[in-house]
Length: 185
Image (cartoon, rainbow, N blue to C red; front, side):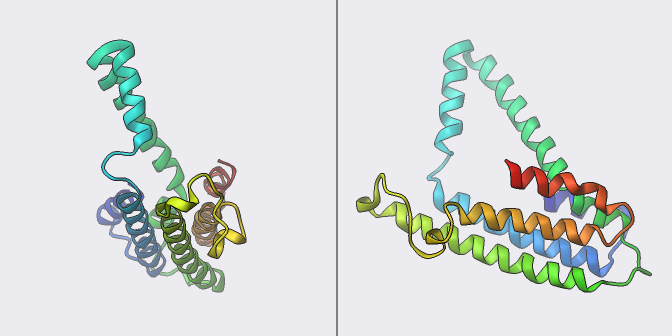
């Protein structure tokens, strides 16, 4: 949703500034990482969603299941649009005459590192969970011995860096809610 909505904005406004292209590329890498994680972690549908749908179906039949699934989809879509506000500001308000700032370069490097480290932590937890001997245990290998949730830390770091990039453009600082929501939830 984040990458596709940013791409639509770029196509509509034709604002192919370096800042916008690099941010979009990083968010595409982030989205691919997320998709790979979901693909590797879940065999088909996520069990939590399947369980929710089953409860809805039992409570009110197929109609309630369809309605509540639609509500959940819309809520997820609106949340992602809100979360991608910093990226949208970058796509809309970056201009050809704008210079790139050192903070942007630092932010992009940290973003790429955070995406890679989030992927590493995801793979470490997948390997840990696949070992039957670890059932019921807390993961303390690799990055997981440094933090209870390194994947969440790196996810937050990605969005703080996108926000820092947004701060280099007019009114970009108003998107502070993006990294705050990610960090606090």
